[in-house]
Image (cartoon, rainbow, N blue to C red; front, top):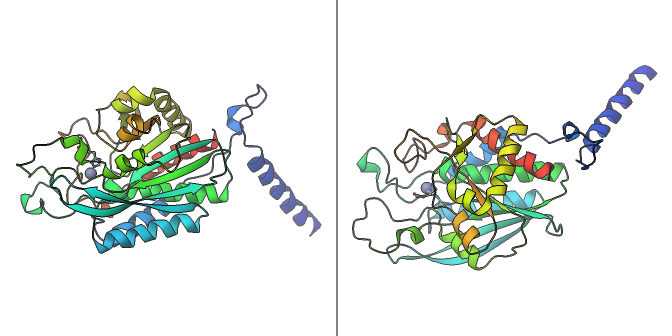
Length: 328
Ligand code: AHN
Ligand code: ZN
């Protein structure tokens, strides 16, 4: 009996030693392999992707949109983040106006060393890239192009609620990223680029805080067969962050998904963060070299559903982010 208790005690103590001894000290005596990075659970991320999609397409003005905003707020709050909603008035490419909101969740806002992790949470109102033109006016469920980034962020917040980190994180869910001019629109003659990323444009003009070391944008991080190339705007404004994250991917064992190759230059939420808010921010966005538009087979189609999400892709991205956070 005593032997059993003794061996239980030993294993408990061993666990404590492992989990407490994880900090990279920077001294020669502490090799990197003592760093304990907690595990990202892709199934748990998957659950929150399904929950978001179950509301239906989260387009501006819809019930699904307001219900999902509440769901996202509640999810981060339940994990101990300080949550705020940043309401904004958005003007669409066609002059229509809509109220919407960015959702900001701060993990340990008192920590001075902070990074920003962000994604858009809205759904594209039109599946304008669908192979069937009959679907071009149907809103997108946006499992990958919307819910995936939020699902990964919520799972990271869950891990952070169980294992303390030295760095603080603000998670921002941007609204109205995908409101850009539809491909079927023939009469638009303004600046096309400015019709995308309305929530991040608004936030960059009205940041709740801006003392971030750097930012990481997640866009479409759950596609089957996705690989992440080094996006060009990220390299131009935040090359050291690209290097840091791709190194982290290698250490986490996911260098096969994080290719050491140049991707395209993508108009995305990192643009106003880099240009207006002056926060060096990279975009983790898939690059399918053999596809015309490079974003993958379900992009802006009615097939962007939870069935077409690959948990292995979520895992590679989520574990890489935890590697960044816990080795900071
Ligand atoms: C371009 O179409 C060039 N950028 C759109 C970025 C995007 C749309 N990401 C998700 N949906
Ligand atoms: Zn999109």
